[in-house]
Length: 141
Image (cartoon, rainbow, N blue to C red; front, side, top):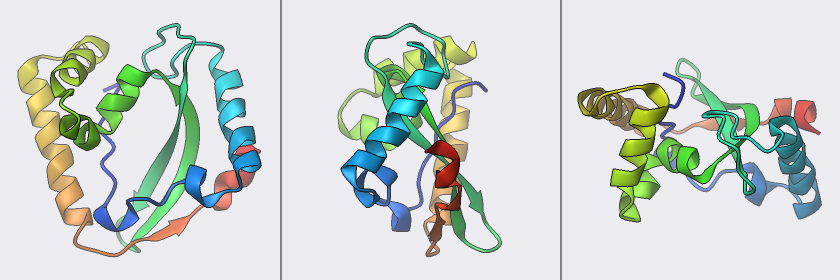
């Protein structure tokens, strides 16, 4: 799938570059992502005047390490799918579901299946404490 759910383990909530970096450094990182995007969402390709920076993490389940993989620029609709848990709390799941299906050419059943799998993985990962590795940050400065 082109657009996926990225559910962060509970112990990693609140750990993000925006809050961990000095504002001027975060501005460099996010603005470079916006420049790479060229005014288009880096997931769905939609042109937009308002991009949002999104941190992509990879998870080493054997060592419980959350590692920064990339910082990309996405549209609000894609960002709401990625962070579906927050989106559900805000009462916007229907819009996120529609966007997920459109971008991925998926059915509602496929959406529900992918969401169930993401929630199951989130549940497993949330049983453990994670270390955060942002050593790749230098690649985005």
